Image (tube, rainbow, N blue to C red; front, side):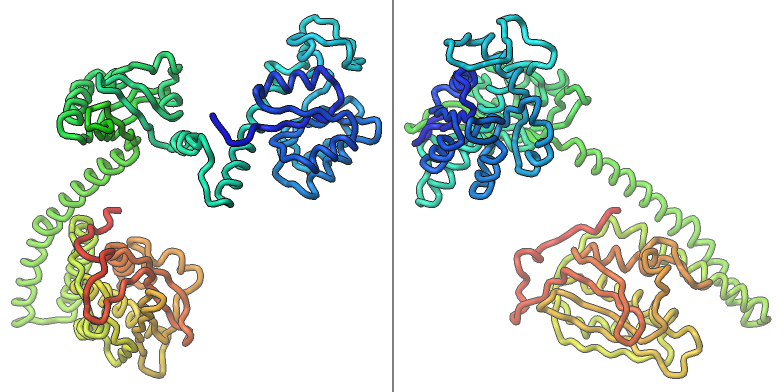
Length: 526
C-alpha cells in the first residue's frame, strides 16, 4: 500500500536487538529509538507515531510512568509493552491504561538474537546463547507480527483522518476499497474475459479455506455443487452476452452446503472492450429455508381453512337451519341453549378462518378516513349502551376492509371486557390519531387489563372470558403487522385499556400515497 507519509514506530526500550527486530518487522517503515524517558518524551512530542514499543525500565524512570503521560494526551496510540519479571505488579494498571500487547521482554530478546544476531551493543543480560527459545518464548515473531498489524491499522486511520480534515483523499487509498470489501458478509469476485478468477475478498477465502494460489484462475462453476455447475456456466455466458445475470447455486463448506445467490455484471475497458465481469455472492440459505417453511405452513393453513369451510361449516349450517325450524313450532329453554352453543361454534369457525387465511391476502393501500372506518366498525358490533368518541379527522394509508375489521375486534374486546365489574355508567371507547407521531390509538374507560395478562393478550387462543374465542386480539395484531404497524397495550388515563398502533403513515392533503406506502404489501405469514 502507498501512503503520503511513512509508517512511524518508536522503539522506547534502549536495546539494539529489539530496535533491529522492530525495524525488520515493519520495513520499510521509519523506526526511531529512545534509550531514556527524556528521549522518548522528546520523540513523542515531535512526531506522530503509529506504534510505541515500550520497555519497562529506563535509567531515568519506568515505562509505566511514560505510558501514563502518553495516555493523558493520546488514547489511540497502539502500545506494545515489554515486561520484565519485576513488572508483574503493574499488569492491572497497564490494562487500565490500554496497552495493546503484553510480551515477555526476555523471550522477545531471545527470538531477536536468534533471527538477527547482535552487534555487541545491546546491553542484554538475559543470557541468550543462540539456542532455540524455551517454551515460554513467542511461538512466531510475536513482537513483529503485533507491531506490523497495530502500526498499519493506526496509520490507515491517521492518514484517512488527516486527509478528510483537509478535504482530500489520501494517495494510494485503494486500502479503503480493499478493507470495505473484506468487511462484507457477502462474497465479492472479479473474473477476467476467459472466466478465470482474478480478484476476491476475504469472505471467499474464509468459506473455501483455499489459498490465494489455489483460488487464482479458478472458473466460477468449480466452486459449486456438481448439479449446479451447468447453471453457473450458463450464467457466465449470460453475463458476457447480456451484461447482467443472477443465478443460485450450492457451495460446499465445512459447515455444510450453503445456497448462494450470485450476481454478475460485465466489465468493459476504456474503449468498450470486454475485460471480464464482477459480482456478489450472497448466502440465502436461511432465507430460502424460511420461505420453504412458510410455504409449508401456508399449505397446511389452506387445507385447514378448507376443512373448516366445507367439512365443518356445512353440517353446522344444516344443524342451525333445522334448529330454527323446530323452534318455530316447539321452542324451549333447552333448544335456546342449543342455539347459543351453535352460534358460539359458528363464531369460533369465523375467527379461525380469518386467522388461517390472513397469510395469503394482499392488501391494497388507499387513503382512508380514520373516523369513517371507525364509525362503520362501531355500527357492526353489539355495543349496548357504550359510546364511541372519535377525536381525529386524519386520513391514513390502509386497506379499508382490514382496518374496519381491526376496529371491530378492538371495539368488541372493549365492550366485552371493559364493561365487566358492575359499572354504574356506560362505557366510552375513544379513537385518537397523531400524524406527528405516526400513531393511532383505541382506548376505553373500563376496568383495564390485569398486569399479569398484558404480556399474553395477543397470543392466539388466550382469553379471560368464558365466552371469548381468544382470536380477537391475535387478529388485531396480525392486521396491524400486515399494514407494517406495531401494536402495544398500555393503560389509558382513565384507567382502561389503551391499544396504540405505531408506524402508521398518514396521507398528504391531496391524499397522494407516499412511495413507501404505495402499491401492495403481503400480510404476515407467521
